[in-house]
Image (cartoon, rainbow, N blue to C red; front, side):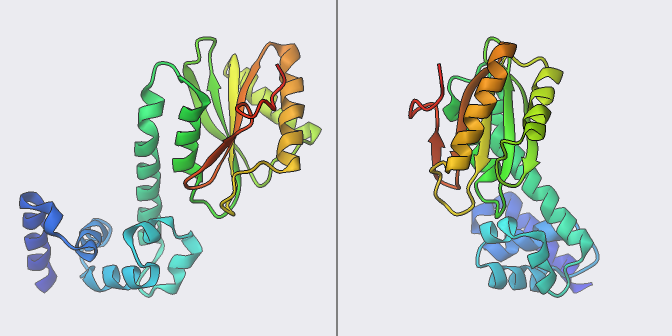
Amino acid sequence: MHYHGHRKRLRERLADAPETLADYEILELLLGYALLRRDTKPLAKDLLQRFTSLRGIFEARPGEYAAIPGIGEGIAGFLALLREFLSRYAESPTRARAILCSPRAVAAMARERLGKLAHEEIWLALVDRRNRLIAWERIAQGTVNASTAFLREIIEHILAVKAAGVVLAHNHPGGDPTPSDADREFTLHISRALRPLGIRLVDHVVVTENRCYSLHDDDFLES
């Protein structure tokens, strides 16, 4: 079929001079790995027209893809896989460090993972006594919650991996990382609950796509 020759020429250009490819050409090559027997150029152009940029496409919520003719579960799944790959790629420098030098390293990791989301998520960076990263995991979706049940769930999670310290991280989709009263109340509750167990609450960072707020840096955390 005609698009096979076109795709072959794009791959040759990718090998020789990838910087010469237009955004839609990069996208149609990517989509070609999910749609082997289909001309992906029209779909690539439709996606760029709808979402304006490659970044806009990968940051779109899954439901938004439904408005584009030709996108089924296969393409939606492929884009979700690619998003996850890019998030883990961005996190890898922090994951690879033997020691987390500061909560800012966690904030940078959290911005890549959470900053673009349209809903709130809460993640834990769990460290050992030498501040080496043990785990980086989502604990909940939705706003922070100082309920007894939720605090117990967090503590059980920390104890399960034998962490000596924890950095809490969550995002504010509105773009302002300033902690709310609920954020501060939650921070105090978890700090006080962890202290008798000998576990350090190293920080609670709130992130947006480009900014972060550290409750440790503003001396809010109790010593």
